[in-house]
Image 1: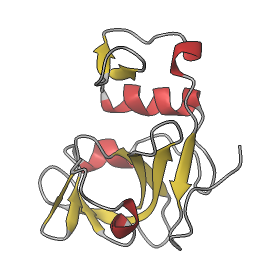
Image 2: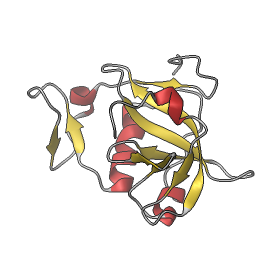
Image 3: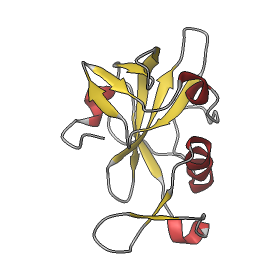
Length: 142
C-alpha cells in the first residue's frame, strides 16, 4: 500500500476490486501493534451485508478509491471475524491463506520476508489494533 496515506483517511472511501467494480466502503483499518503500519481493512459490502477483511498490501489508493487487487467474489468470501476488536494471529493467518498471500516473517533483516509455509504462531506473535471509523486511534480488546 502507499505508505504516505494516513490510515484514517481510508475510512469511508469506496473500495473496488481488481476490475474496478465497487465492493463497498472502508469501515475500519487495522494496524499491526508491533509496527503501527496499516495491514488490513474491513470493507462494508452492503447495507445488510457484513464486513470483509482485505489486505492493504498490495492494495492502492486510486482515484479516491481503495483498489484491492483481488476479484469481488474472493473478497466477499473472506472469513468474517466481526469488527471492533483485535485480529488474533490465527485470524490473520486465515486471511493470508484465503487471499493466497505469503505470510511475512518478522525479525529477519530490515524488510519483511516471506515464507513458503506457515511459521509457528510463536514466531508471529502479532496483535492488531484498529483505527475505528470515528478516527479515535488504536483500539484495545481481545
